[in-house]
Structures are given as structure tokens and as C-alpha cells.
Image (cartoon, rainbow, N blue to C red; front, side, top):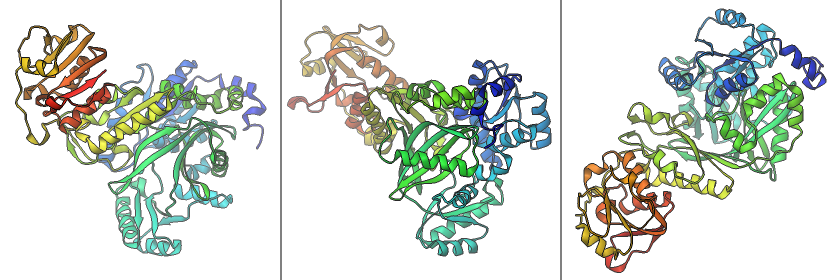
Length: 578
């Protein structure tokens, strides 16, 4: 490698030379790549956002644009935005007017445009002649084969007859049919046998006629094993590991759905082999500069590439979240590679030592829903390892289609903690809810099977409790009772915050119409109990929740209360302690 491209040969000269220019163009600054805007600003440079035309049909493009609008709404007002333009020469001239220091990609759809602009403007970046290897899975794996590295057998097919021939050549029943470009299991089919393979190939070949992003249909042998993410940043061909993650997927709705993604807190057996292989993949593909999000499978034969995406990891993670996990964030390291190679080299010498455990929970909607309420945030935000959430799908059309790929997940819950087991437990709890109690997350909360139990007078309920001591009753009955503080929803927040006993006495159907507000009030009520206090919930209350007593137990678990055994003479009344 020549000294002009290898940054560590002359870091000071590179840094000073590049400081002469001020504008940095970020193509598609979306998802985690949105962090590049702030990263550029805090370094004293001026970011310019450039929008690329999304792939797909016009309907699919509009969906991408709506998602992008959420990020554009957060864009600092003084950041110029260059809009979509199908005429490349006009885009080139628009960018040239800014005399940019760099042109870099923030997300998938910006990789090709950023690489081409960098090449045509004579800026630092990966070589344009490598663009197919950087963006097309078929070319990636051919590059690995040419370099003598393990790869997944397969090729692009142009017809159903071609697909039949390749299926016979592969000599395996299980294959994967997918676009040669793309990410996140979108339009990916896992096939068993010839019939399924030909059906999937035909479907994608038909789709290719209206979607240029599916112009190449790839069929590969299927490799199964543990799936990992190796995120790297390269500086003049010097590669650095910035984060390591593992995917957890489940077979569902005809594909493998993303259930969660967890950070690897410490390197273990097999990880060195994986990381070394990832570095060789980068060399084979021709990566010299910037961030790469690589996805790999590890089976009994070792690691093998699924695909690389030449941009920062997605999942719309904030820099604050990433820094809490790893002590740095990827887009900042990305800029170090271009702007400060000396710092990049110094940081690359440090050991891999994540600070905390994190899991990214991709919410699964098992069946189509006509959304009436979405109490998912009320529940998730009270988990001990909760950090933040992204629930953009619940803000639009009330009809939400079931999850069939990463883009159609119900949202993202970001978890993090010093306590690794707490993160794992919280993530598993959310998965149990979405599978067994989905109405508590995404649906209308209704009485279980229409079963409604008549409410007893307040005095009788308190008598069953054997209420002695300070007692708070959250009730919609309008009753009052000597010896207890009875409040409704309007009075709840101002109530005293250290009661020995609590009674949840809600029985009017209208109290359960606004479920998100109701759950918020219930959690406020539970917070009024002192440590060691006891809670009582009659059947006339929990019968209005979906899943009845089980639904109430979920809420108590979220609030951190311990469920107690019911009393023999009041078996229908739930008891919990704080």
C-alpha cells in the first residue's frame, strides 16, 4: 500500500491538509448515521445533508421518505439539505459548490452515491471500482472466493430455469433466495426444496421488473449457526474493531425475524477467529476507509460472511446510548479515520473493553392489528434496564401489518445496564409479552372473554383486606370510607406517597378506554406504597384487563412488586407486596 493512502505514514500532514476545507457532505444521514451531523458540528466543521433516491417501488420509496422525515425534523436549521435528484451530473455540481472536505455515507442508500461523488471529486474514500463488491452480495462472495476465503456458494440467476439449474448444482435442499442488494431480511426467502426455491425466485424476478433495487436475484446455499455483527472502521487500510454484537432471531411468519441484538461484553472462544476473518473480508472487498457493518454466521466450520454494509450500524442508536455501552461511538471513530489518523491509531491500540451490557429489542407483531392503544412504552419504560425507545409505527395508520422483516418490526426498545443479567431478563420478558400477551403491548385492551365481575361495596373490600393502618384506595366508584384515603384519577398525583396498604378499585368500563393513561395512573398509584406495603386487587378490577389475572400480574411484575399467595377466604382478590 502506498504512503499516500496509508494514513499512519504521515498523520500530521494529512490532518493539516484536510483542515483547509470546512464542509463535510453526509449522504443519507439517517438511522445511526444521523449522529454524523452532530459529530461533524462538534469538530468545528459544517455538515451538509444530501438525500439519495430510495430504492423500490414508488409506494416503498414513500415509506422510506416518511421514516426519513422523522430525522429531517431533528436536523439543525442551519444545516443545508440537498434534495433528491435523479440527475447525477446535477447532484455532482451541487455538491462541488460546497467544496467539500469529505463525502461520506450515513446509511445504506447513500453508499453508492457517496463513493461515486468522492471518486469524481478526488476526495478520500473507497475506490469506485470496488462498488459492486461493496454493495452486491454476489460480488462480495466472489471477491472472497478470489481471495481464497470461505464464502457462501451461489450466484445470480436470470430466470426460473436458471434457478432450477443452480439448485441442482448446489446439491442442498436448503437455500436462500434474496436480492443481491439490500439488508435486514427484506425480500429474503428461506426455502426448503425445489418447489419453494422456484416459487421465491419467480416472485423476486417478477418484482425486479418494477424495482431496480431487485435487478439481481441471488440464490445461495443456506448456512445456519450463530449470527454476529462485526462493526469496524478503517483508516487507509488499517482496520479497527469498534463493536461486536450477536443477533437473536426466531423462525416466524415465513422468515427468520430479528428478536433482539445483544452486545458482546467480553471476547470469548471463537471471537478472535471471527474478527480476523472479518479483517480479511475487508481487504478482499477493498475497504480502505470508513465504517463497515459486517454480518457473519459462525457454524461448526468457523465464520463466514453474510454481507457487509459500508456504513455505520443501523438500529437508529443515539451516540449517548452507544457511548454508554462501548465508551465511544462508531460515527465519531468514523470521522477520526478521515480527520485525525493519529488519534485513530492510538485508540486502535486499546483493548476491547465494553463498559456495559446492552440489548436492542426489536418488537415483533405476530398478527395484523387495528391499533386502538399502544401501552408498550408505559410497560417498557419501567423495566430496570430501559434506556429509550423508538416506536414510530404506532404514530401513523392504526392498521399495522404483522412483522415480516426488520423494517416492519413494531419498534425498538433499547436496554442497557451494569447488571448483565438484568438486561437479559428484561429483554426475555418483553419477548414473552409480545408472544403470549400481545394485547398488553399493541392492541385494544378489553375484558377477558367478556367476563365482568360485579364490584363489592368499598367497605366489604376493605374488610376482606383486614385493612389496618394507612390505606390508599384508587377508585372510580365515587364512594368514600372512613379510615382510608380514597382518590380518583384527578386526585391521585397529589396523594401522600407512603401508604402501608393499597386497594386498586376500578370497575367502570369507561376507566379502561384510554389504556395508556390508565396504566400510567396505575403505576403512579403503585408508587404510593411504601417499601413492605401490600397491594390488593379485586377481580372486579383485573377482569377488565386482557388476560384477566395474568394481565394484572404482568403490570405488578413491571412495577417491581412481589405477587403473594391469595388468602383462602378471598381467593379472587390478588395480593402483592412491595
